[in-house]
Length: 105
Image (cartoon, rainbow, N blue to C red; front, side):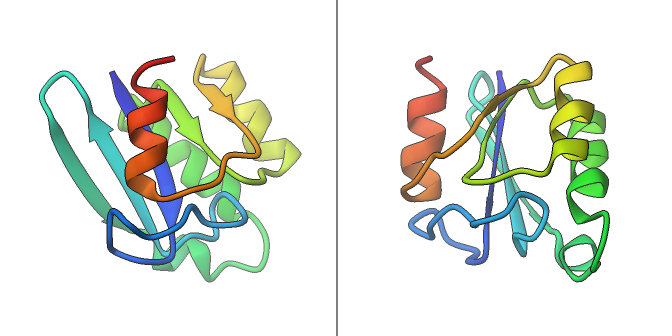
């Protein structure tokens, strides 16, 4: 399974970003292969409008199945739901904690 979490720190102990799409980094964990990619999301994060939509489109291409976020806009949420991606809202904690939790639910 592939899980994604956004953070402003390039560190597994960094906290989940407050708003999906605005996180500087996107951690994409493949729990089956036990591999994590850290994607630099600064170009989308800097957008005044559409950061969530662009990030959602990227995660669809990466075949993400679950995402942990604190907050997410309606447009990005709809795109992810339409793609069959489970979105877990109002999560808090470190990137590591969220990936570990989502890999068990």
